[in-house]
Image (cartoon, rainbow, N blue to C red; front, side, top):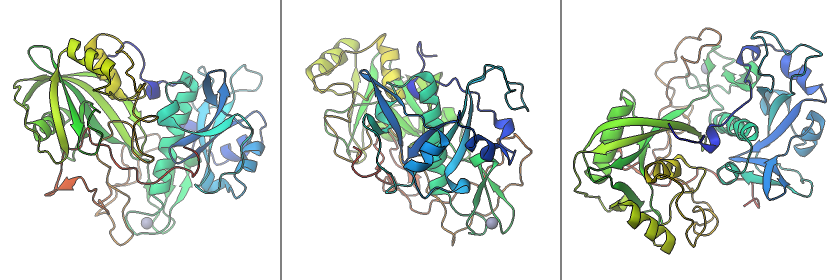
Length: 409
Ligand SMILES: [Zn+2]
């Protein structure tokens, strides 16, 4: 495992999932002035300047509603949990105990954002993730992941009917057939491939500037093990054959729905062949060469929020120097809507009502995570797919499926 927690994997809040089914929970928390609300829109949250860092801007329910005037209970609020780590499962925090407040996420549809106070700003979680405290990062990551799912899955994959949020914002239910649909998370593998000489394989995507390099990554396909996905992706993208793999850690990457599973992978071959289409180049780096190239700015590595950066520094043995472009790809080197991290190719989009999934599992037992809605058919195959397979999923930057709130970048 990594020495330090990955920025978006840190969390200290008790999600209190056992309380979500209480239909009185959200109304009660909205009536409670001690409830803290974070605002989420697209991949962004409202943060507040705190010295040179930023923290989540947390509002009372009344203040939050003022920031998004057309809010409605059903569609816009979700319960994120409590600070109280000693809460007895099944019971709300008892009165008089020194537990922390409850946290809610309030979804602000893009284009409906009201004016913010001075010092507050809509901030991309990708960019601010390393600045936030563990509590704030955990809350923001959960809120972004949840609302990226809500926005993309407004309809029942079985019958096409519009679904409604239930379970305090964690499930969508179809009023026509009663089926429940759960937030999805798409597993993706990302790997530091290392050869016998302890060199690291990094690649440059055709969609990036030529100096930008990162680890290979790709989605796990249906019916495939994680280990197989690693070997398949590396071979497809670079022709390098991978043997043993070692798990290093994971990080949610809710842009919109990935869970990045990080590995060290041992190469059995060293000859590189890229297709020149998805990947422009791939190279083996030893530590001296990587340090020198990063310092010179001829290689720019992914930003600190990403698990790719952590995998690279895990192999390197410590932090790499900051190059002339600074940390990351966002501020200085990427166009307006580019994804500044080694995201895998876009996940399958939400189903169209005209293309219902073949089946939906039965409603799971309370608390069970399994039995989510059947995997949605890819309504709009991503441009990086070809010949019926996912081509060179990583480190290709997935084009964002939607821009953030205007004027916030
Ligand atoms: Zn339905």
